[in-house]
Length: 428
Image (tube, rainbow, N blue to C red):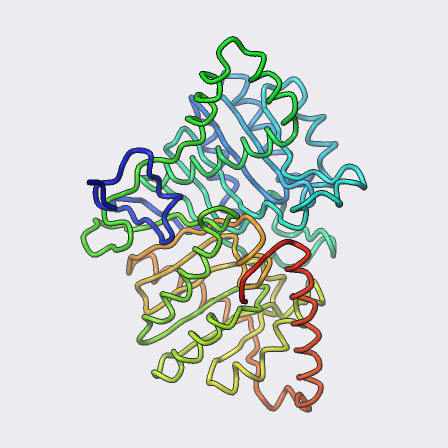
């Protein structure tokens, strides 16, 4: 009889509701594109077999051009190169991407394109590809919140004086196989979605359609579940798990991973996210943590990017401050980082914000690490960012009584309508 400790080969980590940890991994925290892009290009430059990239934004600036040149060179060497971008996040760059990758051997897929007005009428268009993944030869992987765009360029505000705050993590070891399978799956999903009718017709006309279908499904098969999938006490350093938020089996895996870590906290919880509007269970976990004497600190955006997102976070300030949560706003530059650290033993880096879009709608990807050394590295970055932040106090909220209630009601109504239109169900 198969168990989680001895799974059937068909059973995959992707089918599990909880993070599947593996040991023996190597991790490196990367700050901004200045650290991520050279590491990616070095790995791609040495690639001999395949490169997979999934990203929300692939911009036509110097950073994007440098990566395109690297991908073209890899394809010219015979490396299989596959890139998938989000149709909304990369809409201003798609014409440039298609032109620069034409006849290069690089296969470009677009996740839910919106190149026609009627695309908006298709189901699921509010659910976007927000993952940032790069996998090289199944040996190197990069996961985080950093889009392919220069650190000093903001799509809404142009060039900035200071680099945005953002992070990714470079990975080697068993965890890379999970990232690779996720990148292949989302690329295949976008590629088949583009020409699904033709692909289906080709399968039917094929003399051996089921053989072709089997090869296709095998390309999407996830690796075996690691032993000890839900714990880490018996795993060698560095113990880590790759977690998704998708619309299949892992709809709330990232959210539940956060909540579980917060519920188990005993000393400190530090979270950085630009967009913060958690659900009831998440907020209850934060409140319960402060009642246990845990110090909870949130670092949110001080430079407003999207006004409705800022309004959503501010609508919760009074409640959170009233329960002892400390709130800081990052003032040095635009904030795009999504990281967390709990008790110097648990840390996460990824693409998921703590809001309904990330936790219930978009395709997201995070790495969760149970390692004291890595947690200390993340904690040090939190403390550094805190030096360029200002603390929010209850006195600063002023007349937040009636105004705060009205603001919170408006935000809750907007979020409810948006989620229902997007097809999200369940209590949040």
